[in-house]
Image 1 (cartoon, helix red, strand yellow):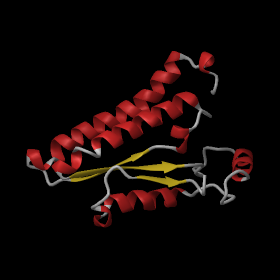
Image 2 (spheres, rainbow, N blue to C red):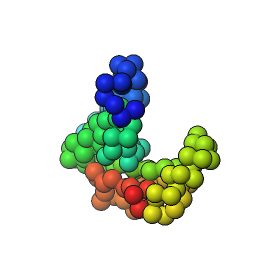
Image 3 (cartoon, rainbow, N blue to C red):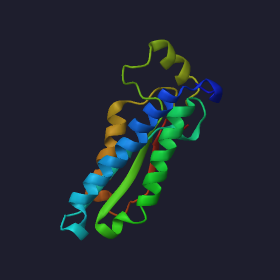
Image 4 (cartoon, one colour):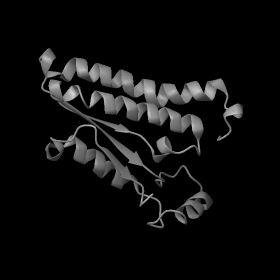
Length: 148
């Protein structure tokens, strides 16, 4: 829903609870356990956002993903001091089986790669951020959107 006057409170709250508050509380609990300041061994957090965070196509959802990205940006400045990296993957249209074939066909026409992404392409980005190869990454946003 793009029309701000038609967004119901329950939809807005649902999206923020799922996409901003949920990752916040998971991050908070992870930091309590993994922070080197608390005797933990550090680690890596990867948040899954969406290119919708930069678009008004689905306003409430996009706003909630933008809030998630703001959290990651802020924490990326402080968590490395505790041995924790935090990064974001930002998928575009991914063929998860939730979108109809018609939507996939129409949307693929506007994506420079001319196709939807595959779940394993998003998983590979997450795997990278969780690996030792990304030890110097914190606050990085990796867009996986076929050129969008």
